[in-house]
Length: 303
Image 1 (tube, one colour):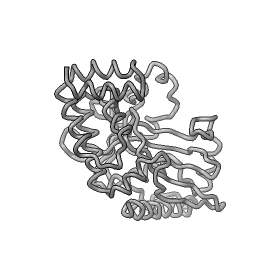
Image 2 (cartoon, helix red, strand yellow; image 1 turned 135 degrees about the vertical axis):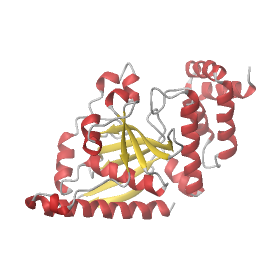
Image 3 (spheres, helix red, strand yellow; image 1 turned 180 degrees about the horizontal axis):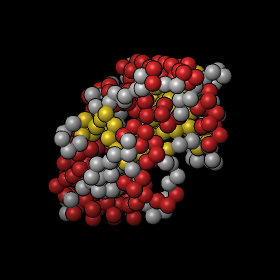
Image 4 (tube, one colour; image 1 turned 90 degrees about the vertical axis):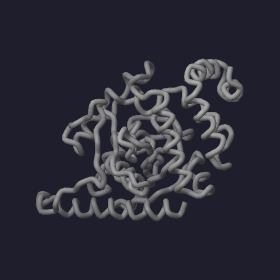
């Protein structure tokens, strides 16, 4: 029995209960070499702004589903190691602390035609879907859209943003949980932002963040390849139209794993290819995108 595994098992038991600890123990024992490598990274490479509780959650995440259902233990640990290495290399300790805080960091504010303010923020939220979340919220605290994922590498050792989850609009309750259907706020926001749909906005924000890390490609899962669909409690309740959204950028093509590949920067239609009556909104819409990208670059540089 590894002393390290036993130590982490005890930490997990004190924070998350013995059922989680026992599952972690047997899984880590079965993949001892990989987990000892993972523990070494957590203990020696992460700065003090990563709390002991967060480090324990990281250790436990290694034994759980992560980003893709087909990933091996070594692959998902490599993904997390790459992600946090990129963050530590890019941001200061204060910047990392702000990102890891529950409230996250504000990336940019989009002002609609009505004068309403829409906040784009990023959090270091860790879940089965990834380790970073970009979310757009309206003045009523309604989540209009979000993308959760992780910055890692693909089989060719190239930097990639792996999308774990794409979520649409849902009003949030005071504790941050989902409250009710959010289609009307999404429709209202789209109109207010000159036709810029919230999902499009967060995708462009992901593109801006990715390119700052030297990422040239986004890999997004089809619905059948989405990690949450493997959850017996939630798999039948995924309503976001993953495939329809990603089809817009990939012509419906997926790889052998069922992932859509989006090359950065995302291509745009030429203005002359846009219908005459829609050109004004097209110009304003992509003006917003360019302004948002510049704002995100400035916000992340400050970290």
